[in-house]
Image 1 (cartoon, rainbow, N blue to C red):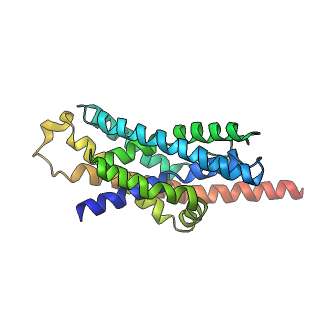
Image 2: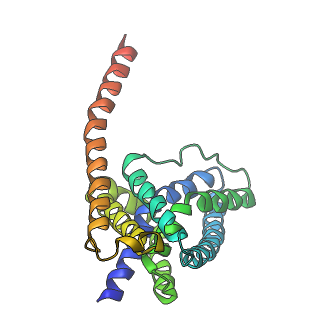
Image 3: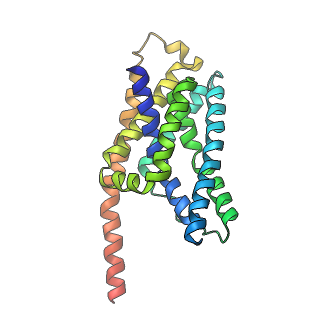
Length: 230
């Protein structure tokens, strides 16, 4: 059950953090003929997946080094918060004019946008390479072939994004708690306290931010509409 739970966790983190990658793939290949579009998506995704697997394995190794685990946890807290506070970031990707330019754009953009994804998955896997391989193997096809559906589902059911951010935040707390830097606090506080506090803080900030952002967006849209009519 623990293995299955971690496997589902890796798949969830990968899917939730990869929503923008689908937008990049679509935008980079949009100027190509239909046949070349499919080739660009296939080769670009294959190259990006290969590099992502290598980066994730490197991240797993690095997280075994003392103190790197703690600061990796701090970075994961920021990643979890960013997931709830930011909108999609793929809109500025230019359409490529040739097949190989589109493939290169997809690979580079995917890797740059997947650094947070890599660290989060490595943290959830906790050094288990079988778990890591299965999680990536099962979730990557979902992203490549069902990305648009996934984006629509997450837009319709924001609770999925909050759950993903909460999982990343909890993992960050466990990483920080397990580092040698925190050894002096071992036994003084329950092991679940730091992960719980971090998770609660990240989700609370996300809820507060999104609750206050909607009225502001509506005001901007209303003023823009008035200006257009005027």
